[in-house]
Image (cartoon, rainbow, N blue to C red; front, side):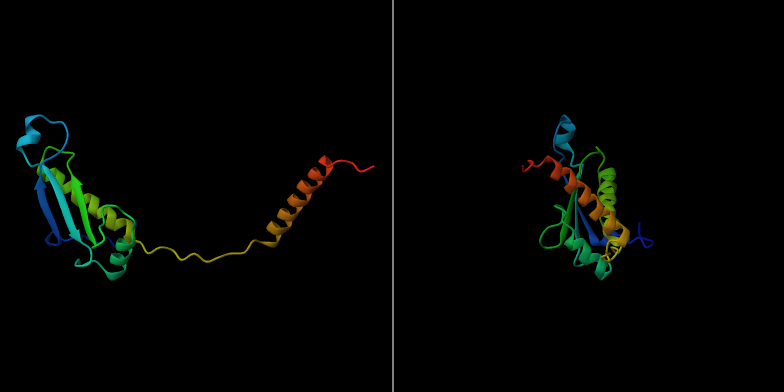
Length: 135
């Protein structure tokens, strides 16, 4: 987890109430309790490195234009669905807020090389014993 937690401003997020899918009887047909959250990454106040990593993230919720669309419909309450959608967006941002560690290539130690060659020699000797004997 990053020591800095970048908060999403509610002014940068757009909510649209829609009707939920699935079973639920008359409530589903009458009430628009599901929520679509839209968040424009490029126009956000997030720091530039976080925005770049967010755009590079291979998440299906992020469109080619840099718009994040999250649909929340697990609750019958629109307010709870809004909070769930915001929490999912925050999780997405938290996932990329850490700067990835730079990988520095290493070399095998001398002992590791020696053990590898020893194992190869032993395996070779075993296979040599399987060969046909030339008379």
